[in-house]
Length: 387
Ligand code: SAH
Image 1: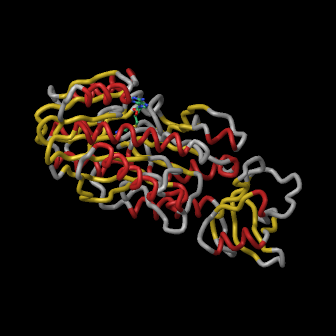
Image 2: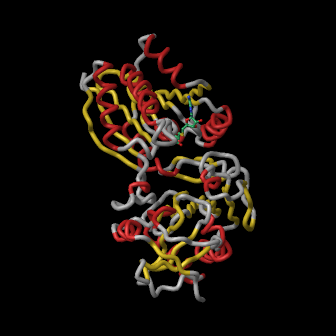
Image 3: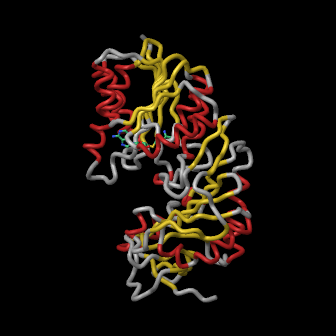
């Protein structure tokens, strides 16, 4: 098959050579009225640069897939997904990310497995144009009982793609049970956040399961992934705070599933709740702080940093002497440097001496490429109060 060819300007070629798969609109020569789908890339002298996905309406106009000479067809998608699956070989949890988009060399494709079921997100117009091949490859490699497309993600608007949740094939129930280190958890694939659960924190939840003790707090708890792991460990009691009644309803189901009776749920704005608890002189031996992305873009970063600092400051005030604080930020725009500077400012204001015990990130099934910073959005730290 002969693909339409487009020329990449030198700046775009430089980015590709530096190992980043995106070419922006401004780094392309005129592409005329080309429609979404596969394209061949060349530099301005006509030398082939490989095959890419083309999105006519997006600022990220091109996403590189394969070098020149490699045919991107059904067999290619199958081979790429098979290779990604093989990299997850050691995972014992029954739910994990099979394809982490750019991190697995498959830009704009997210594929999560929940036991016998699969949930995918197709996040670019170029990818949507080859959906037939992609879905067939997922079916061939995973053979799931059903595949759900969570194509309701807001980024699809930047691609001028419709947003919606759609069953690609088979059947997918409202709740999917999976197990993580002996803890049974439910995902809500049709209505929950992301593909129904936050799989990126899996290894961190396991860590907290081994560390947690005494009075525990899970702030921004969602469906209680951390809370349940702490309760299954040595926690005496766990308070789980979230503003979403729907998420807390699943958390309660999760608690029943594990016959756990030590988790108390609180539906509240965590900002208010943490402030009141800190002002009341309360103390917790283990605190988990996993807020949503406050910085949605670069412009909102300053306000977002203030938000992160506020909740971290309160969490630090709540820490009992010797207590553990696991704190995370999933906002891509909040970079590692910002994150640790924010923690330092919060610790100074809280007047606490905190040991940085471990720098953490997303689980290994969310590969972060050194040349593609966007693949590494989750930053986390395990801190311990020294006095
Ligand atoms: N720790 C969870 C994921 C947390 S996601 C896990 O491991 O599965 C972030 C959560 O923060 C979401 O459940 C969302 O409902 C909640 N949230 C967002 N803003 C909030 C606020 N102001 N107060 C309390 N919860 C909030």
